[in-house]
Image (cartoon, rainbow over all chains, first blue to last red; front, side):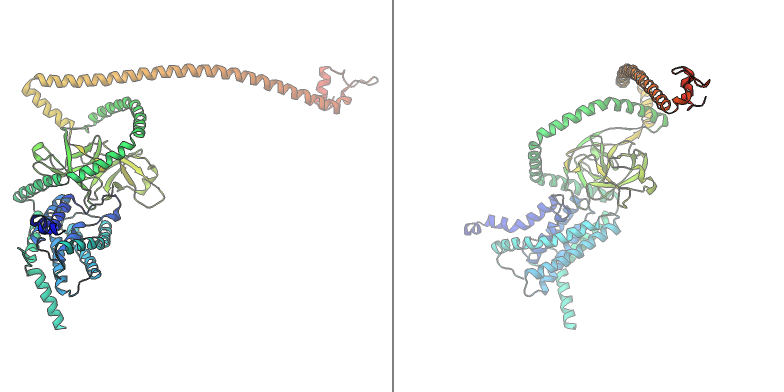
Length: 172
Length: 408
């Protein structure tokens, strides 16, 4: 592992890995349900953005998240700018949460994540329904919201290991 | 209290305005930018259209390239599954093919008749040009059911054109870029297609459910008794965008007593689509007008004559098929007639034999009745030595007397 850390190119790639994953996720629309069971659908981009902006890593810039949102809108066929707006709201929430938290722990992050994505999904639904007259089934949105909340715990543990390995301890 | 409020304001201000380490943009500026983009995207000006088309084009192509490994994995798993079930599928397909072959001729005839009748009604729509295209992005989002195809305005695609999988309806084009287009699937909840439910010829609207199905809307409950499971759903042609009779799917899990939705299961499996055809339907009269004007210009040049000849040949072929079909039916009817005649003769013979049996049975009954009465009233009817009354035993008068119960 030390040889990996000495290799600056590989280190850079590993540090860029979260943003690369975000772009792959939005290009492939990774939040979709691959198994055809509605309850397994989750929004992977929300999990990525929430975790890595909360950890405040250098390479996970707001500008790149904004571009990822634009790509997500084009791929899903939603009005351009909507996902960027939602992603920025998540960034605002994590920035606020980081500034008010003294001792971060997984439970607090998890609960705050539920509050954040619930608000963001509500805004998403309102904008689509009332401003663009695009109907979406709110039941899917609710199940997606809940599934994203549940699965966040799992990804949190995985990302935390990765974070500690390649970025050092949390600066929160 | 004031201190905590101040803390909250400071935290919020910091969240919105403060640029973090190595962040080039503040969140507030990006939020404003996204709102501006959202606002602009709701306008249909030429500049926004061109910009949006350019962005879409670039991102669709990039997404197609980046999602290639995922697609390969998906196809691989599908191919492995289909490989293991190849034998059973082959047998099933062979059986289906035989059934379809026998139905094909009847269908051709019906189609031909239908076409002629519709021409008379001035309601016959034909597809002007079929554009075959490949699906480049199909990510099955939970919210918007759509996919992107690799043909755009440069290939003649226009918004509203109909998308078919073989002959089954899939959806319609909602967004057209230079080299790509987005298709809204029938399963999307924003999709509304006028339909006819057969049998019963019920007119309604099919609305997507957001899953791989659609539901029937705007149909009164009084018509529910005409619907059964496996009732077929076609396009009704209302609105003139899609021609009538394009198959969509069939009704499943229908219970007329329950208050639930009437669900349509599509004939086409949207999860397995790779190639689709895009087409627009125009009235045949429009086309004929165009053709006649072209004819007057070109005065039946080579290609026009060739087209006419092809049409006539097609018509002749259908007529031949009709003749063959009628001949075949005649032969069948003759065979059936001779069979029926043979059956009739044998049944007549049977009836004769049974009649004879019944008659003999009736005679037996009469005899039995006479004997029974004879025992009881024979003494009264028989002629005695010193009396004038009575008849000789065995004479017809004696029999009559016995049958009249001894009344002389």
